Image (cartoon, rainbow, N blue to C red; front, side):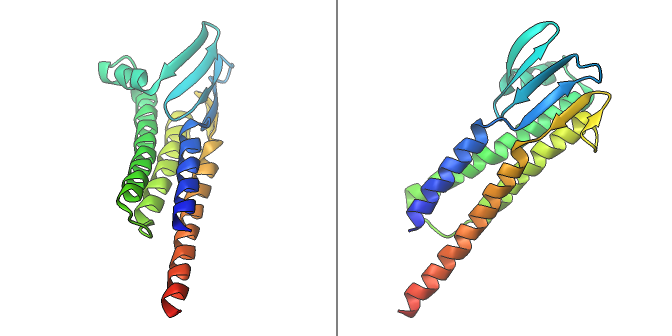
Length: 168
């Protein structure tokens, strides 16, 4: 039973890394719009279409091309992605070594990833997710919170399952 839940959890985490996490509009005048996932963003502006990877964004921040609120937003987004990658790595490591039932770090890292993604949107567009920089709709954040709740629920179910197994 635990292996089945771990496989499903791994598929959920993979979906969270691939599914678009953010839909945004650049500027109040609608200078551009885009979709952003964990590792890349697609954006359409009056200058044309762009696909920008997270590595490119981090390079722009490191070189000083992007600064201020946009740089903070990119760094928080990278932190959220790092949290989700840590969750996937931790889950794979535990599955490979046969460890089950230790999910609290998974839940905390997953929630940390969701919070980092949400703070990234707040850093760019303001606390209402709408401002002079545009607006942002973090559609993937509720999905990540749902994955954290599911992980917590699976752990509680496994604990109940182990308790009934020990009583028999």
